[in-house]
Length: 194
Image (cartoon, rainbow, N blue to C red; front, side, top):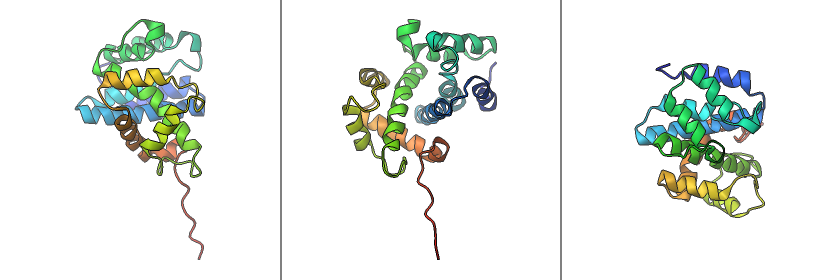
């Protein structure tokens, strides 16, 4: 496969991922990856599909994640750069260190999207629209909040990407806001009672 098709990638998600929350996570990582691809002048389709497919096997085979996904994608001819990045985002299990820009970008976008989405969900608005980096950083410092997010991993990934944590959060927030409705994180429209 030389060209990465978003349509084909989403079809794989529909087959392998039934959890709506996991699908939302995949969409969020895809959006963040696409934004970074534009920023870095990289292949937006490759970056987006890597984000969309990185947890493809998590629901069905969590104990083997991401090895099964890479096996499935390799059989379909997906680019080795994508497969390497998917392996590298779970380096403790796979032994593949995040070295390339694509690897480091996926690593940096994965857990931070979860923290941002969790921070939005506890706001009265349940929206990304009025969420700022300062609020997310405050939640980041609270170890009890979204306890599954490995803060040290987020710090290492952000450092490896070469960006400041607050800048990274702000950048990812900006990437997620346009898809807030898809993520269930947009303000409800104001009713115009006459």
